[in-house]
Amino acid sequence: MKLSQIGIRRLLRISSALVIVGLVLEIVSLLWFHPLSFVLFAFIAATFIGLGILVYLVSLVFAVSPNAENRQ
Amino acid sequence: MIGMLICQIVLSIVLASIFLIRPSLTSAAGWKILAFIGLGVLPALCLVGGMNMHVQRSEQTRFCVSCHVMIPYGQSLYVDDPNHIPAQHFQNHRVPADTACHSCHADYTIYGPLNDKLQGLKRIYMQYVSTPPDPASIPIPGGFKNAQCLHCHLGARSFEENPVHAAVMDSLKSNQLSCLSSGCHDTAHDIANLSHEKFWKPVQ
Image (tube, rainbow over all chains, first blue to last red; front, side):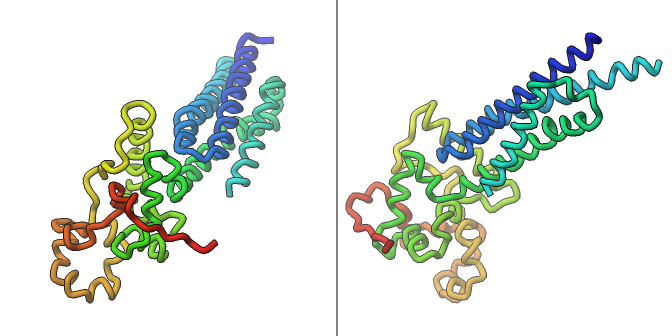
């Protein structure tokens, strides 16, 4: 197994974990009827989800890079 | 609506859980597409849906009065006095009762909802980090603008044919003369004297 594949899988795990935590917090914020629920959503849940998506996009870059090297 | 959003979030969690447990699945083309949907598209849609839901929810009267300092303002909507402008609007459904606060205090401009949200965040900061204000002396940033009344009243026959309104219409439109000026509609909420008021009890 190539080192990059291990890296991609680790990134996918991190991305999934971040997205899951963010989405669970979003559910909590939607069920909690309080002015602080927006703070929970906008500053914590959205940060986790955003970071999860970002890490997933980074993993895509990793996944594409070895093919580009192979072409050369 | 909230049920659909929660279903979408649960679906995203299920998909993300698959890739948390078995990230090796993404080596197959079909799973790659599913990973793109589960870790990219669906979470992004959940974010947009969540923001939309939170903005809609913050327009509700019961959301506004769920803040401790706003409780007297909620009570003032039930004052049994025809001179109390907010109470009259709320009790006679001149504004939607479930979005009464938002109807008169919304910033009806292109970036209004964003400004309203920022103002709300400042209030939360004051409540939980700095000193909470006295409910009777909470200022409206920039003062109460006539545009918030004119948004509904401008163009209404009873408003425009009223000789007092007609005489000062230009001043009202340019915000030089406030609708809440002394001698006009000057009783709004009046939190300081709330303990002396009679209250209307809606029939359930």
